[in-house]
Image (cartoon, rainbow, N blue to C red):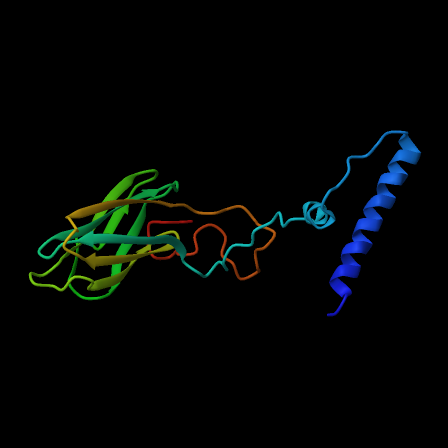
Length: 198
């Protein structure tokens, strides 16, 4: 690049000085002096104002949860689901990944605005080595698909643990600028429950 960065820097500095002279000539007032042209240029640069979410067919990510559990201990996730729709909906629960996970129920039938809780637990066997990890994906399939990545880490410093995750399963009737023609309005998972119309 040679002297190009330096030349560019000097060009920006000269343009800023010219701008200050123009402000002084037009208004008779002194414009603030920019000590660092590069920093001033960065501050003037436009910043993105719109965030495009993942495509409509992708599940809503609930993030990741890590439980630190001792040998013979138990780690649990309590998932509190709210059906924020105007019709009854069935939310199905399934777990993928390592075996040995117990789910309190495989589905929740929730009326309009009702809330229900399902527990997903793993008991760590006796004698399990420290540092062992178990990973599972917890899926909730209702109006929308939601997924949580859950890792249970075995360690002598671990205790029994129970995390609570809150999920709002809501239809989205708003048309967004980033929507495509194949995006289903309302609930992408409609048809899973014959009692729904959304």
